[in-house]
Length: 112
Image 1 (tube, rainbow, N blue to C red):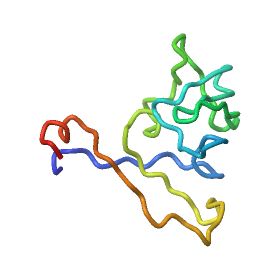
Image 2: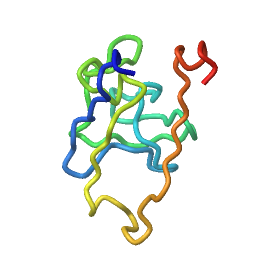
Image 3: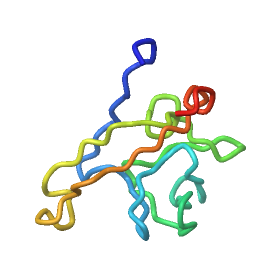
């Protein structure tokens, strides 16, 4: 919609976006952080992944990251992740289809 802000781009890391080590889902606002942000729990599969040193941050008493307001992947529902060719595990089988489901309040109200 014209009145919505543009989708932000996640801050790029040298070795690509931080993802679950098990199911490979991207980090998101529902990821849980543990052990002084040295580990994370996936919001999809529940597995724990070691957080790279360059992606660690201080946690508050509710285990929220101190940088979540400045990292769109930790605070927004939609984010663009820039993935370089060498980041893909199997470049010959790069994603051909992406499914996006709009579950915003506006979509629910209008029945989209």
